[in-house]
Image 1 (cartoon, one colour):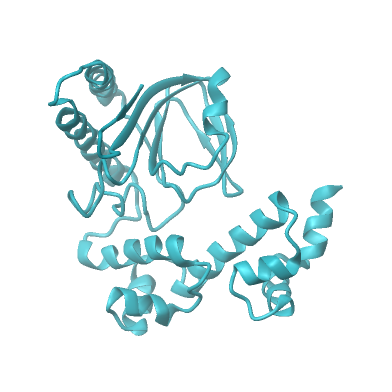
Image 2: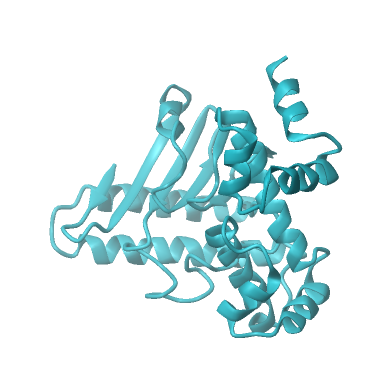
Length: 276
């Protein structure tokens, strides 16, 4: 079921079965997506990253994730755009740039503990009932239910993840950097460029990364550019020149050197191997 306000605030709340995989044929450009696997173990591939999602496991995705494969029996899906719920209008942790969506690690996921499963099921049922309401209070109720859902998820995620430090102000820098890279990785390729946007020095950002995660800021930028390069080589017919330009390399040779250094093969050889 989809709710859309007159001011383009959107939220989708639906139970999806395997025959409805066509719903994910496009990228998740609606905004934020929550996938709650209610069936047997599912197998997902996003941006060439394979993840297994057990029953009662929840994953959190952004509009920047590219869907490659979804193999599942049943999913509960929540999708909402930034107009409906976003960090600029709501709390910083459960908002769009919070831990659940822009983690310092890979795609965040959590397992609903057995003692919490009835709570999640009840909340889901209320969600579905509210989606059928017609009055003017509907949007406020849906937003409140979404926030409650995210807060409960956040509490569980914090107990299950070893990558959330107590220093929220510092880790916020990492999450914001992560978010900015997703938005700007094509045109901004240096840490100093992101430092300007964050109003921090490159050294401060580097030290924060060193404290909390095992990657440098530059590694994060380059990994994102590399993922996009693989995607373009695999799913488009763009020339090497066009891909190099798209990813802000000075020339095809610079792009080829970048790609070969990280994959041990040239862009052309990578593309040719995919075709075999």
